[in-house]
Image 1 (tube, rainbow, N blue to C red):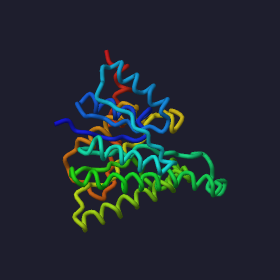
Image 2: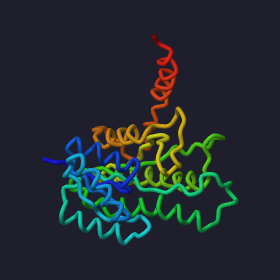
Image 3: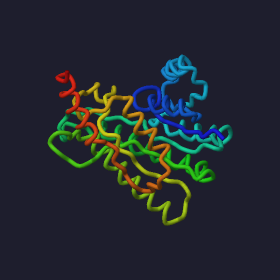
Length: 248
């Protein structure tokens, strides 16, 4: 039986690559996109790889009605949905100091990164309940340091991480058979961060591999935010890249 997964923000970046890898592994992928025109362009790329097990579905985390409509569509056409990957999110201005933010800018971040994810969990839990499914929320570490301190992004993701833990704990206590947890893939070079580079950054292919592996993971991560940054392997790869050119 073909397993089905819905991925939000899947027309580019980590979401696109996760969809591509899972589709190649035989999953049927519901490609959640905010902009249907861009979604069609993404679909054309999948078709070029002879991937026909992918279907577009309109979901805009800024418009909660689209989430309810998508859940209703899935309920009738894909009631066997197994996994939801909450990948869509926004980072805001990552260089602004805290008090340079406006309330409107913070509100925009919270609407997508927190309220949008909350509505996804709320709308899709009844479907996933029947299938003992799981909801994987792509997130970031929220420990403050002097190297990575985007105020708005960290503020919204901190709220998301807390929400994940609280919902997961509630589901565990009330025996709701849906896992809700977060995964931290670490830094991934995408449009979101203006293609930031550096030895601690994963390629988008590596980022997609991390999320795809988490989807396939059979362990129970209920209410946890799991770290899959792979700093040790990134460090080894960096060292090897320095050594390799000098080898005869």
